[in-house]
Image 1 (spheres, rainbow, N blue to C red):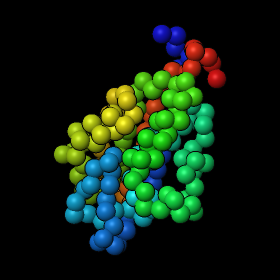
Image 2 (image 1 turned 120 degrees about the vertical axis):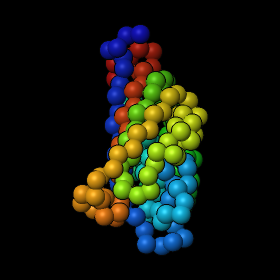
Image 3 (image 1 turned 180 degrees about the vertical axis):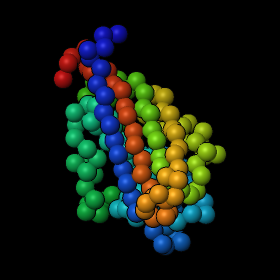
Length: 166
């Protein structure tokens, strides 16, 4: 494999957590109960959004906001795994091969450790390549430590179409 044809993309998503007990907390396609979820136009899944941005970045296709505008009613409360599927289809249709994605989620509560295996399975299935998920605590520092928000980071490695350097 010619490493000069590899492309790296990074993704970041941050959401304020809602005070609404009806707002579901979805991370990596997995519901974290009984916690209040993030405020967002879609379901607010920060991990899916970060993965999507990393894939779009690696393929030179902009970011999630370019393709799924947060003022468009068709994306209101949409399942972010569906958005990620659309991104994966776009990336693959452009000839890119997704090699892997590595993610980190940062939040104080809930602890993600027990949910990670299911997140990895669900994300890997949608992406069609290995997706790893790590979780970090903000150690009660700042707004994340006060349980006001959640942040997710992702890095994708893709192979450019036909070995092209793009």
